[in-house]
Structure formats: structure tokens, C-alpha cells
Image 1: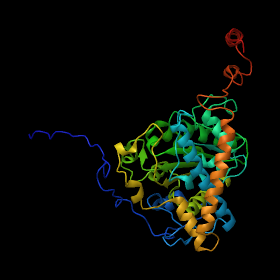
Image 2 (image 1 turned 135 degrees about the horizontal axis):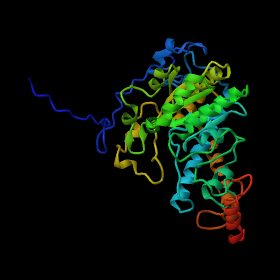
Image 3 (image 1 turned 180 degrees about the horizontal axis):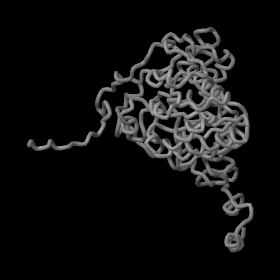
Length: 410
């Protein structure tokens, strides 16, 4: 009888660490336009391969090619470029405001602008997003006022949420943006439940769930997939794979499935991967998944392959866990530059017009910031009233809260 070999635990490690040369050779990138576009009612089993590829429309020359191209007009693409540029300029001003002590916290979208801005164009009025804290592009592309977003970040007396949420945790029912939860993955089951309720009521509205790659390790993610697949809820299950969950690389949460999209295969869900830095590809896939939900065929899981260029938040220092040059080495490029180059390629844009647009957007964002700051910032100016703690919580205020309010004199 031989002695049993000792067991050892496998702990995944990222390809490189700070000080090493960035390496994305493990990311297999198909040629733009090479991934097939199945019919909207395709059987999930027949498109399993799409969970392991990457749908791309824009090639390196800025051309839109392949079966997923053509879902947007030139005018819509120009508007999409503007939305991404506004989000980027908004990020820059709010990051600076946080460093100046005007707010306690902020989270950038740098490098991920195409995901939320393009997706929003595939939705209709009344559809509901259940987002994470990095989908502000849904609001910007949906016409939500920049001043209101800034008021929420500053928690001033014009904050539409009356100081009840952390900065960047927006909420707007009218704009299809459900209240953000700081607890990871809770919004996934909420989105599926909302979509099920829409179907039960024989409504026409669909839901979109959002989650980051790291949060897919939470149990709520898997519970949501069970209910979505069992009841064929009209929901789009979005996974934003930006390579890093704060300081933990994607390999920890991904497990042995190879891709995050592949997680959906075990639940019988059609699962696709898309180039998250390709505005055209994101919109095409979102439109495909939305049509599937609206035709009552069922849910779709979509993984957006992108890269978080900035820090996780203003409380994070990415240089401690990844090479500083890694974002420049990311092979799928910058979403703003890629869409700009495409528009220039088709003769609808120019470098001069782009520079002019940057200046115009900067002025718009600065003007909005000045207006918001007239209502106050974290340490100066107006703040939400203490009475706001008591209002809008209960239909009928309990006796103990009435006594507390009377004691507070508000």
C-alpha cells in the first residue's frame, strides 16, 4: 500500500504584477466581422461557440464589417460619440472635485464608456436597468441632467436622493435606472424579479441586469440565472468583464469556465461575448438580446470584454497590483478613439471637429458643475434637510418616528 500524495491548493495568479511587462497574449481576439450573427430565436445549444469568442464590428482600419454591422445610422453614431465624450469629461471633473474635497468618493468609467452608452440605445422608454456603480453612461445617453448627477455626488440641498445614497449611486425611475445598491450582486436577482413581474402583468417592458466580473462569484448571480432560465424572464443579463475586481484579477471569480459568458451555458441560456470597446458591436448585441426578450423568447447573458483604465475608485491605487503600462497594452483599444476613427473613415467627422467637440463638452460640463456647486458641496453650502430622513420612507409614519421628528423639530 503506497502512501497517498499530499494535497495542494491551487490559487490562480494574474499574468503579470507591477514591474513586469504587460502581457495580453492569452486574450484570443477574432478578426472583426468574423463571428456569425445567429437568428434572434436561435436555440441556445446551437450557439454555444459564441460564449467563447468575441463579437467585433470595427477593424483596425476603422471600418465596420461583418454581419453585426449596420444597426446604427451615422447620425446615431455621432450622438453616441458625444455621449461617451460627455461621460469622460464628466469623470475628469468629478475626479478632480473629489481630490479637492468637494465630495467624499467617486468612481470613473475610463475605458468602459461604450458599454453603457451604446447599450442604452437598444432600450425603450419604460425598460428598467439594474446597474452597478459604473453605468452612468445609461443616464447620460438617456438624457438625464448632468446637474442632477453632480448634485447627487455632492449630497447638497438639490440632491434628488436627498443625501440618502453614497456619491455615484444614482436613481431615476423615469430614466429606467433602478437605485444602485452598494451590496454586490443584489441588483441581479432584482432585475430578474422585475422582468418576471413585467411578464406576469402582460406588459411590454424588459429589464437589464448589470454586474462586474468579480461579483459573479456572489450567490445572487447564480440564483438570478436559475430564475431567469426557468421562467424565461424578459431580461438581459450583462457581465462587464473589465479584468479587475478592485485588486483581484478576473481569474479568481471566473473559475474554470474559461469565460464569464460560459457561465450561462449550464443554465441553458444563450450566451455571447462582445468587444466592450466597440460601440457598434455593443449596440448590435444589445439590440439582438433586447429583441429576444421583447419577443418573449427569453433571457440572454452577455459578457462585455473591456478594461478598467482608471482606479477602481478614488480609494484605490491600481499601481499596487498591476503594471502602470497595462492599460496602454490592452489590445482592444480606446472606445472613444475607435468610434472617432470610424466616423473619420466614413467622412462624417474630422480631427478638427473632434477637438472642437471636446472644448464644447468641457464648457458644458464646467457650466453644469458651477450650477451644482451653487447648491453646495460636501463641506460647504446647502445640505439636505434633516426632515428628509423621515419623509418618503413610510406611507404612514410609525408613532416612534413621529416622536423622533417632533423632538428634532423638523
